[in-house]
Length: 168
Image (cartoon, rainbow, N blue to C red):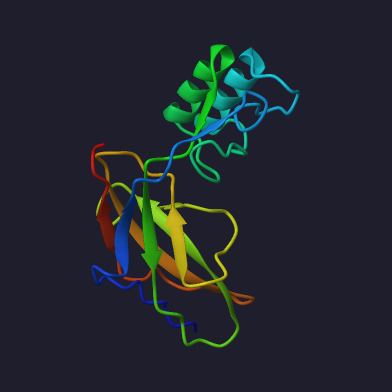
């Protein structure tokens, strides 16, 4: 049986990284979700479907794998203007490595209620012992747990850590 990884709850290990720079991208980059060279209603429909979970989230407007109403709005705005890319807030998580043999990575889960339910933040396992979650929203409290992954499966959840994202 794999030991659960420890999600460090010390303030220094779980903190908000504020003041992420807002980057300007042209309309042929991040908001062009179908890659046809222009941002139009097709991209808007893709953004809506991604935010509703009807299409796999491939957007990288607010962060890797973040598809929500803000992404939809940015794609909508980019149809007549420019595409704003980035998120002014992010949560940086660090944890202690599992001492179990054969650990190949860690899965990070996030919820909006203490004790869960939790959703996988990133489909692929994280190789190291830290992760920056740029898919957070201002004014929201998030609860995180981590699991260790090996060829034999996934460990139980770590202890929960929380982060309050400030309002801009």
